[in-house]
Amino acid sequence: MGNGCCGVSEQRARSFLTKEERIGMLNEYKDYLEKEAQGVSERIKALEKE
Image 1 (cartoon, rainbow, N blue to C red):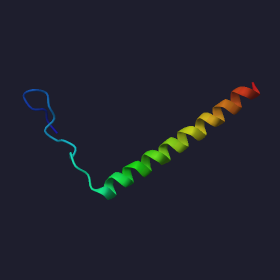
Image 2 (image 1 turned 120 degrees about the vertical axis):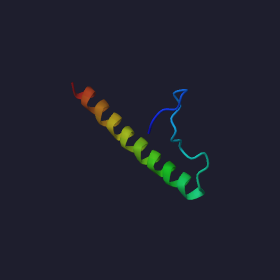
Image 3 (image 1 turned 60 degrees about the vertical axis):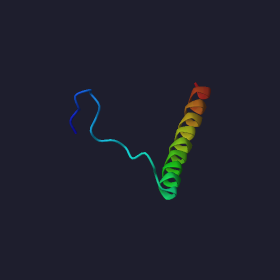
Image 4 (image 1 turned 30 degrees about the horizontal axis):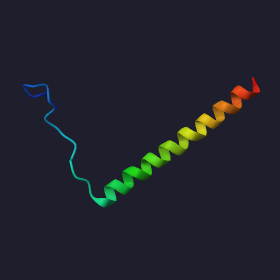
């Protein structure tokens, strides 16, 4: 996990993902966004009660 002479990491993420990997990543992102939206809704309700 060192840096090369130019400060570029020697470890890189793969450039090409399989279809299944892309689907999995998108599903994880969707879940994250849904949880974030739920948190925003809860915050709005809390602010409206103040």
